[in-house]
Length: 433
Image (tube, rainbow, N blue to C red; front, side, top):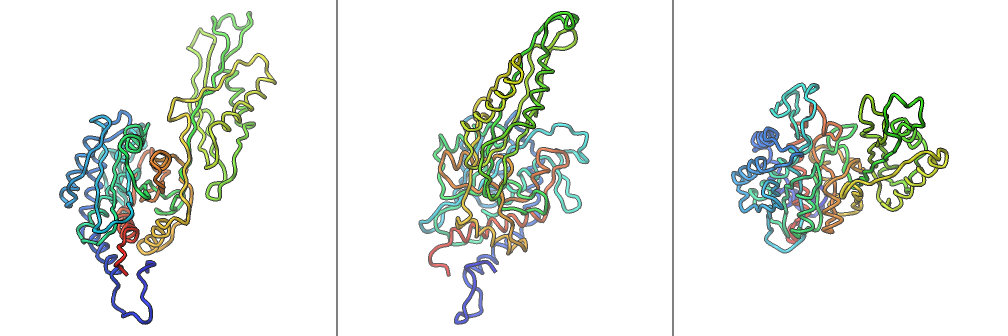
């Protein structure tokens, strides 16, 4: 039983108001199971790849479904017309806190289709899974959040404060048209936010409740050599930028040491050197410049200044051993130069409510963890001051951005129930037992 709904020996054995609310919400979701799954399939079938970035079609599907569910009065906030963000307020009858449920409507592009076993733009229900681009990241969660909001309204659950449903654009690229715009220019406010990013990693769906959203730092290492006619490289002084780059990359891979404090939910940052390599012009030209791109997934407590110093210290050792080496460090343009990590304390009331709801619906309490990637939390929390739980949703993160993306059918239903039950508890009126 969820905490807060227990009875004492002196109370009657009938259901409390809280327990009745839970039962009503779960029953409503079950009765609308087919509609919810159909809505998730429609979202998958509506392209919203980013880049190029245009969420108008998928938002039209969302607004139409919300209208059918009685969620009238949704607002559109957009920095540009083709990048709409959906905002809906479900206001309670009494003053209270604001809980934000948020999902993004864009996806990564399909990319290589060779390894897809289904058409990525055609939703397919098979073996208990919904297959299709964006199914796990995160159209399944978006559908669940819409239906959780509808369940609270249609069941006429008494709430204090309000549930703020946000479906934002541009999460998969710059976030400048989505969470950054909402935080910096639209003045979005809430007491706490929950993002529905997929929370399965190595195990089942809802494996983790992620409290940390790791940061991101992207940079280039550029090496310069001697551009000349390649037929003369054995007769004249020459330096191959490509060979020097290879040597630099190999040494950085073994010698780069970062300054950080291990986090209890994530022991170390992830360093990805050479995620992209470019060098030279082609046959006949001795390579005069080469560069490789890298990204580092950072932990709470790490800073851009300290990371820059760590990188420069490593490069300086390499320069010392090879005085002829011309190498330079260049960070990407914002926001990719430094995407700050975020964290919500484990003792936040919503954390325990989500864990309890998962125990009730899924049958187990997820582990607390750190979301490996970056999320909209960096804008909602760092810019708008909203504590943001970065990931608790159906699906598996390793399937995102790759072929055969899929989400569990039952997990979509469970997500709607968990979101509705946790929201009801967080926004419970004082008069409810």
